[in-house]
Length: 275
Image 1 (cartoon, rainbow, N blue to C red):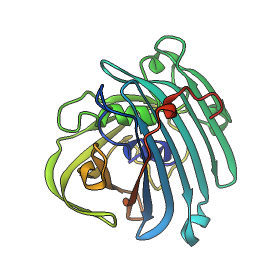
Image 2: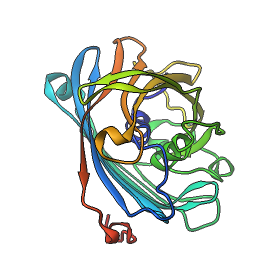
Image 3: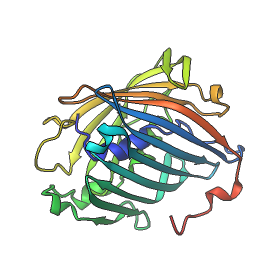
């Protein structure tokens, strides 16, 4: 499966709850915490702060390497997405991401104020990585990784077209396969839930070189386990386990370790000007 650095952004999106708040519901806020294991070793931790209201949403994610294995491939990523709910799903207004990967600093800003195609600021530019460009026409109608996964997984119990996602360097789609009732398990939850498959397909933005996460086809999938949100005191389903088979080092496993519900805050969805 093609994941490498885009996995960090896609992962953050895949961890999001699966449904928008009801029109009459108060603003909901929660912190979801996850451990990330590679080949049986704990390599990173992730915290996602999710804020959902009847008109809009915000998602903040922090992912950082940890432990000996994490220091060998040190990385950290902080991302922020905000947007509004439209009849056909979430529509982002701003996405920002900053990261450090093995000492190299990277940043992306996507601003959705110019019709269907986001204004893009990327540092360093994709060309510096010997990466094929994403045609401007292909960017039309795309959304950022966290908004894209949220759009896809809002319909966890129904059907949805693949979500077109542009992260500043790559364009790909995520599609949710059939979701079935099942027993699911993680350090934070064991009991009734659902299991499904998230399908990934790279469209544009391939980089030169190879990665332990990448297959030449640019097509892959991850298994996902989901728990009822009511078990944690929230109204939305929560992903409790994501597993991806890598090219050479075993499975990449993301496991829920805790959920912390925050006090409702009607001010939390005000437009972010400094994030």
